[in-house]
Amino acid sequence: MLLEKVTSDCAPLDPADDGRHPLPNEPLARESLVFCIELPEEQLAFWVYPRVTGDGLAGGTVCAFGPAVEGGSIFESFRNIPVPDTADFVDWDAGGVRLKLPDPLRRAEVSFTGERISTEFTFDAIHPAYSYASHPDGCPPYFALNRFEQGGKVKGWIKVDGREYRFDGIGQRDHSWGTRNWGVNYHYKWFHATREDMSVHFFKMEYLGRHLIRGYVFKDGHMSQITDVNVIDFELDADMIHKAIEVSIKDQAGRTTQVTGAYFGHRVYPIDELNILNEVAMTTVIDGRPAVGWCEFYWDSRYLDHMKKFPELRR
Image (cartoon, rainbow, N blue to C red; front, side, top):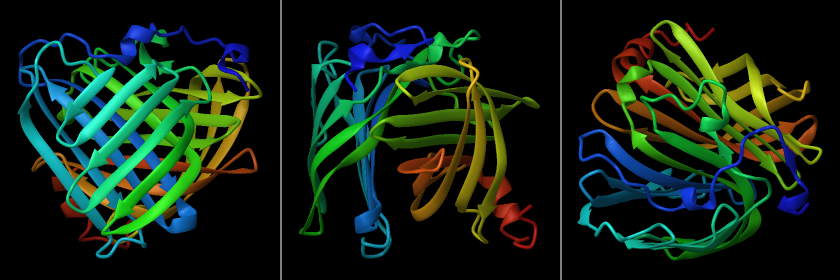
């Protein structure tokens, strides 16, 4: 379906928001993009995650993981690369990551050259970008001034330790700018399930004894704001890695969408000594139709360490 034919009850973004934004020069100011690609047929997933801080230093991570990767994962990172204020994500080059946005909010061209990982691919959106600012309560100010999420078609190749994998499938991306205060949430679930004609995203955050939800459902040619996410069940192993999830989602258009996800690979991603992300690539099912997806659980490392002592307590 052409993007022009997609209807939506979510306020649209300005294409300029696919570029770089001014940031305050403060410790928690940052702008980041991430591209997530799942290749369950190859037992491989990877992300490309460039970012820049308020003081103009570029960094980022690239990670390939899954059963196909020797040792489970390969993680390459770079940091503290000075970039001028004029450097824009429309044409970005830092730390081995090349990013071009020939058609902002619609198409991205991405490449990375590292020591053990190299990749080149295109991302073509299948629906308009979902802006967190389109929610009636806006974007959570402790997590970003604004951010967007989007599903799309991905085509290209990745080479891992000399072995090349070619793909023509589905992936996801997001773009966030503003303040990122990781410690405000004591837990969250960030989830994507995507196929060529359907896409679901939700971000369910737990903080200060409350929870908030942002996200969208795109199906039947219409993208709609999520109004509720019922996490029916999820499975944790002895290491607190999530292996399966089942959710029921309601949206502003009055629809209910059923989604399940099943693990095929993971990477533990420590942000710092207190904040841990468990990244899991999944095969998913949206309303009975096969898809792929990504599910990130955020944990406080002290809580993780405590609960790993009690593997019998998982429900």
